[in-house]
Every structure is written in C-alpha cells, then in structure tokens.
Length: 429
Figure 1: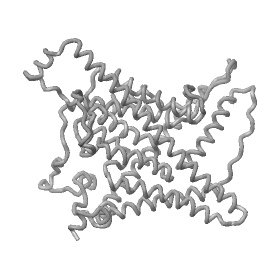
Figure 2: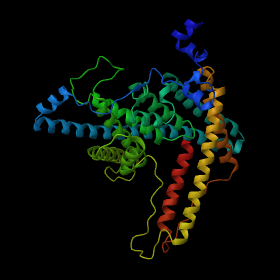
Figure 3: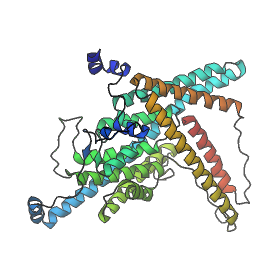
Figure 4: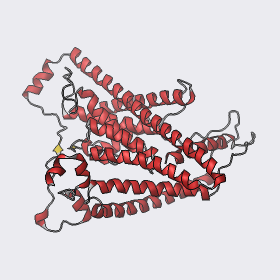
C-alpha cells in the first residue's frame, strides 16, 4: 500500500499523508508546548542573499566594465521590465476573457432553462444544470491544486516571503504559474466567492522571476545564452516589478502597484528600482486596457477598461457648474462606512482564523480526495444559496430614464452601468 501511495498519483489522492501537519500549522494551532519541540526552519526552504558580496573578483568585474557595457546592461534591464509588464497584462487579459466566456456560456444555457421552466414548474432542473457547470469547474480547479499545492490561495504571503529573503520551494515555478492562472479562471467561473486580483500578484511575480532568466526548470533542455541577471538580487528586483504589475493590471493603478511593492512587499529597495517598477506597472495597465477596450467595445485605443476590477466613474455632466459629486454632509457617511467596514473586516478575520484552525485539525490531516470533496461542497452550497436568493428575493427591473437637469445624471447612468456589471459579477460569482 505504501508503494502504491508513492508511485501512483490516483492513489495519492486517496491515501493518508504520513506527515499530517507542518510545523507552521502546529504553531498556529498552539500544539507546541515543550522546549524539545522547538520549531526549526524547514530543510526545503532557502534563505536568499540580497546583499552584494564585495570581493576582489567582483571589484575586478566592475573595473573592467566600461561605460558602453554599463549602458548596454541597463538598457537590457529596462527592456526586460517592459516585457514583464506586457506579459502580465496579457495574462490578465487571458484570465478575464475566458472567465467571461465560460460565464456567458453557462448563464446563457441556464437562463434559457429558467425561462422555459418558470411556467412549467421545473426550476429544479435549472438548478441542477447550474450545479453541474459550477461543480465541474471547481473540480478542475481542485485537481490543479493537487498537481501543485503551492498554487493554492492568493500567493501574496509567499511572494512577500520571497521578497524578504525566504524562498519557498516551487513558489516561482512555471508549473505553479500554469496551475495558478487556470485554477483562478475555473474558480471564478465556477461561482466561488473569490477574485482574480490576488492571484494576479502571484502570477506577475512568477513572470518577473522567469522571463529574465531565459530558462526553466520544467523545460531543462531549453537553454539560451543570456548571461544577465543571474544573481538573487537581480531576480528579486524583477519579482518586485512583476508583483507590482499584477496589482496594476488588477486594479488599473500603476502607482498603486508601485506603492504596494514598495511598502507591502519588499524590504530591499533603491531609488532606481522605483522608476523601473513604475514603468513595468504602466506597461501592464496599458496592455490590459488596450486589448480589453478593443475586445469588449471594438474601440482599439479608447482605453475604457483600465483594470480587472472597476466600479465605474462618477462625474458631473459637461457644462453643469452647479454639480457637486459630494457635500460636507456626505463626509459623515463616508466615515461611518469606514467604521462599519473596519468592524466587518475584524469580524471576517476572526471568523477566518477560527475556520482555518478547524480545517487544519479536521480537513488537512485527511486524504487529499477529501479536500476535493470539501471544495465541491462549498461550490454546491454557494450555488444553491445564490440560485435561491435570485428566485425568492425579488426581480430585476430596468431603471427609469434619469432627468437631464440635475446632478445625478452621470451618477445614475454609471449606476445603471454598475448594476449591469454587478449582474455580471454575480453571474461570475
């Protein structure tokens, strides 16, 4: 039986794991009490040295590098930063396009079934169709996580660890990237309450780590004579740029992506890196905006969709000088919204911590196949709740045409656009 578990992938899904919990999980659960059970660093983790080693050979290399070689090296670095930004934008475009495609196919079929069954009283059949779509998508995403467990979650904590000198095995591998991109695609299309924004940061970091190397552990036979950027420091800089590009592509905010990488991600930074990261973020936002605007509106170069997550734009009508989007009274509501949001966030973190501990104790020690069943159960409950709520909690109605003389013209227009986007989002969820 033990040999089967080691050699057969299908058997690995059904067999129990020999090491039920990692040292990190034992620490979170508070099950380490004795000094003899002190947590030691994992042997498969690696500490990265981001400081330059100033020695005689390195000094000789610097002395032998003239201005022409230095300029060439810097130009190649800027080119790689640009390529990383464009690639991250294309990755975001790929995920967004197929999420909308799968969602459109799913809801067109289920919508036709609901229209036919509303009069005949067979809405249960429509629910089963929706369940079959969602559970099939979630099953594919779960299998991908079994192939590469590091691809689970958003990947942001792991990337922060990498940028601070801790290399987690497989965190920037090509296989992790493929499982991450495809997994989030099917997870969002399958109806789970997840988003594309967090995984885009991880995907961007993998792109930043892999492209400048011109080699891959997965494809060992593919090798290029590219002698640049072989140190941990150079790779870390490109990972910072890739992570920032992921934020910029997700939210359409190049400056936000740069600040995320500077403030939240990296502990090692320099002024020259700031401009390269900003340029990479701008390249990612430009690429995603250009292609999404052309594909969705058939207006190439209009740049109407800057990011994957967009709440619309509120602005006053042209020529209306009396228009004000907010007043001093509205500030009180903004403060109240912030307080309520903070309390809900604290409640969410508390519940998430309790649920995570429960899963560590009762789900993780079991066979991997149980984890697949868990994800399918979550997908089933989510689908039933959404389907029941859409049937029982009212119906969608068209908004009346707004008047053209007050300050709510543009706001109501964009609110209606936001409603349609929300319906698409609910369909995605």
